[in-house]
Length: 173
Image 1 (tube, rainbow, N blue to C red):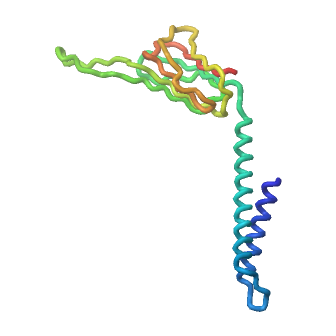
Image 2 (image 1 turned 90 degrees about the vertical axis):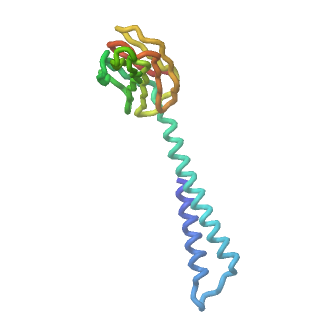
Image 3 (image 1 turned 180 degrees about the vertical axis):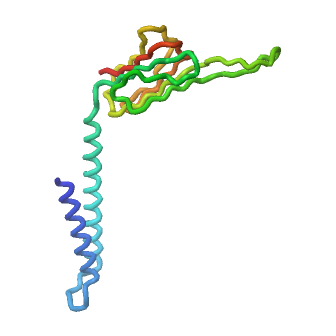
């Protein structure tokens, strides 16, 4: 509330001193430095109020962190996109499978190898950074590493593409 009061005072000062400098001949004239100072202080107060308002909005976003987020995917062994089985506090996710395709020089036949897989997860509401767990109840996961994890997103890289089964990603404090 104080920030809005400062903003209104700044706008009032800028308008009063700005209009007074344009006053007709019959009105008493103010020195030029006084009108410029009044307008300058008014603009400064408006800027201060805007900074306080923006700071208040940013501070309210920081306080709205949630404890958990979960994502369960069914990964296929072929080239199909994984199927989302369940989720909580997940805005978007993207599964990127990197392939290496080469040609056998003897047969001329194309060969395809799954080199690695990357899972990008973006949280709907920012999470408290704690533990990010990657697991599966029915398959043995290849070596993997959480490359980046903050309150907005996570990037998980698998050394090889996982075989067919479920993949669980969960965040907890």
